[in-house]
Length: 161
Image (cartoon, rainbow, N blue to C red; front, side):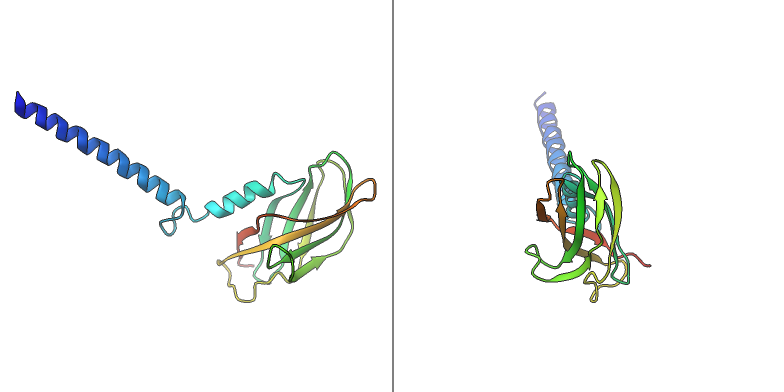
């Protein structure tokens, strides 16, 4: 009878240990602790940020020539005019790497696609990861001017074409 109790205790201990190890592995993979597993968590977090802003960027890509394609959507309750889109290497946008200055009027919920040349990808090859900040300059229906830099960068993989 005493031997069965010891075996049961050992089995319970091993099961609890296995559960703890599985939980630790899941957490480590989500935080990017293993190369190739969970490495896109930053990208997914940034995408989540960019779809919740007043002027969202729900889709984006960067080609191997350094041209960024950004889809902008107006989530505000009023019509706005996008006056320029700039890509920057730092959050303060001290170094602007690309500008598209064409005015575009967006009603609530409308989308438009901007192409910004010269995103700083000179040291990056197709398939590599890149991150950059975006500054959106726009006016509202009362002609108030806004210059907004996202608090998180856009992170993506350089396309092959």
